[in-house]
Image 1 (cartoon, rainbow, N blue to C red):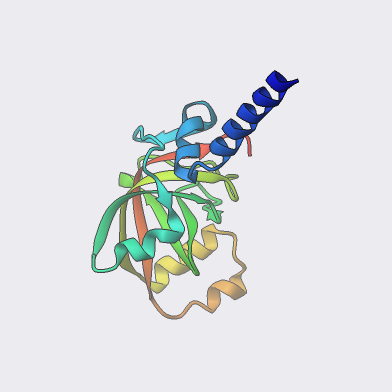
Image 2 (image 1 turned 90 degrees about the horizontal axis):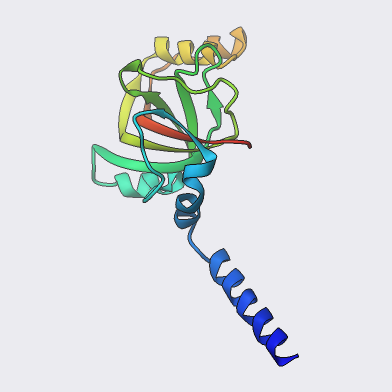
Length: 164
């Protein structure tokens, strides 16, 4: 009976330790088996949560970084951009040299992406284009009348979680 108790205690300790790993370590542990790669080959290691990006960007015009997030929205025409929630803001992620696209049904799926984060001015024309590609109504598009300074990202590689 004592051996069973010790075995159960050890198993429970291992389980608790495994569950206490950071999300970055959990991502690394299953990256090879559960992720599809787009663009340059990247790894899941050292990815930070997209919600932490604004703090990391303080004092910088741009930052090379690897982020982990869920896709909020993706271009419904080609998959040529995706929007990622970053705190209370949304960041548009485009792909280096228009060299690859994401699946048009990846809304809500988990991604890891690597590249350059920066602030950029988006013209009214581009905002309307993005709204159209995102499936917004003509009424919503007509309300776009001013450019915006937005948080942007140019990714050279993306991992998309499979099977969500």
